[in-house]
Image (cartoon, rainbow, N blue to C red; front, side, top):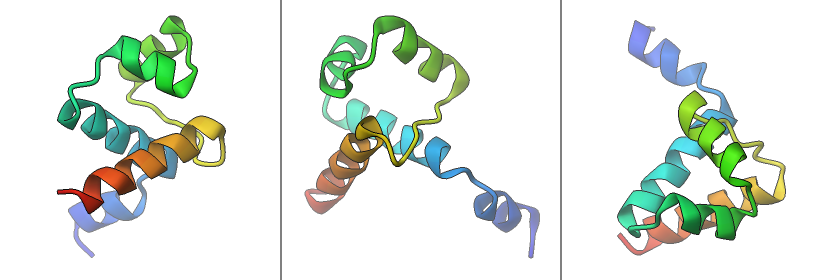
Length: 77
């Protein structure tokens, strides 16, 4: 197994989910204020997520919303 494959295998689900959500936001031209509203995060929480590159708990309500949003985006690409 090479280094790239090992890195992919070790990726945390919450970080992957955060990156997917950022992609959804970019593709749909959603700003931070929009994400705050959709996910129910405070401005401070969303700022920390952007600063720390996530993660979002996949089992949380926000994680479910992020997962469904990404799935919906992929279905319409």
